[in-house]
Image (cartoon, rainbow, N blue to C red):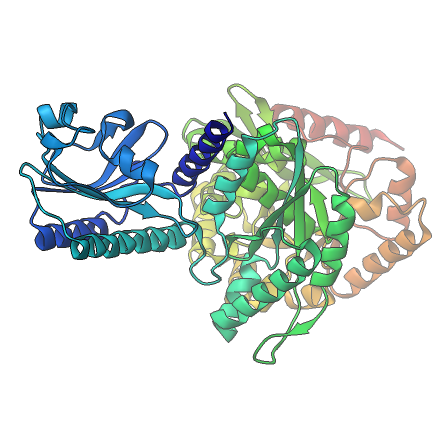
Length: 596
């Protein structure tokens, strides 16, 4: 009984290695294996040469010279005996060998008379397959022949190791790669499903930063940084496997019962310390750790790496160091991506529309204009707001199509209002990416000319972006926009960089103060001081000042006292569709005009 249990455990381990190595049904590197088989055929002159791998119940032929067969049931093959005895098996005449004389493959096709099989052994001596020779005639097979067959079997296993390294190792760092990561997680998922693991991915450097570093200093600098990070992780994680799962991404697992967040905080702190690379160049990582606690049963999910990469990026972006996977944020991200895929259809089927939030003159109280805001009437989701899809769209070429749609629609609407004696100026947002388009100014000019609107009625709002002021071509394009007579506004001032150079270098005439600082002017003295100072400074620099997010009369009055030029917010109106905006503009102006 004991021997049977040992044999079963050994066979389980052997078959597990076949699966772990991914040997069955893998047709990669086929020519390399066929080359070894052809060499064996030339040396021994047999009709058939097979390179096979064997799992629990099947023998699969990786190379099969001399036969069209590609597999056999394990219990019907000579090679099972080779595997079981784990040494060279030679059958010089199967018809006279009592073990095989009644075998179906001897009595029937392919009518085997000669067989010589050599086990294919892993580094620890487990047989995962065979290199075997088969012929229709009896054949003598000397000890030298057996030694040569063994040498050829070693060549086969050398190729297996090469394939494994190419498949399961990162070519540059020689670390276990993403494929190995998934394979190991899948193996773990088959054991103790109720147990838990912390799975962690660390983004060491952002993609843009790593690309710039490689362009400036070469790949060696990047690999030095990865090697430094790996050494820190190994010192903190002991013998745990560390995987290289992306260009600058490392992964590992921690026991579910461990204090993972404390461990990650310590590792993150160590990774952030400055160091020198092997060439003496100073370096400093800015890592983000994404972590997710999962049951072993969940480890086979193909979404693991994606969700952890998202958490790691969030940790880097907000400088937290460590971020847990957030299923709500993940659902929002997937929805945003799905909407981005649908956007071309939405453009073609006229599902987009504009709403208009009024802007009010702070001195007269009259409607002075409006900001055009994008909406999407989705056939199943209802009205979708731009925050749900536009941030992703701005990173793709689709932003050109969206901006063009907004521009043409807005110009047509202004032309209709002009014809109806409702002359207003309207602003709309553009992306910094739009300013990288060489024909942006031409398209803007064409839309104005085709609709007959006045250039000054159009105002483009540009969100603070430090990259804009460093790009001479973009600045030249903005000057060309100004030369058209189109007004340029800096949007959401105070929420981003608030760079003085931004105010001094851009050819803008309007400065829109972000709602986040406007909301605090009644409760936070520093906000009040800042807003009053910005208004005064803006006027001295020639800006017209617009305050967004005005929601109370007290805020309105305070801003008016400080000399703010225009106000925008729910105190006056929420964003309105076309007809509602027209009604509001006329009614509101009439109410203001009738006041004493």
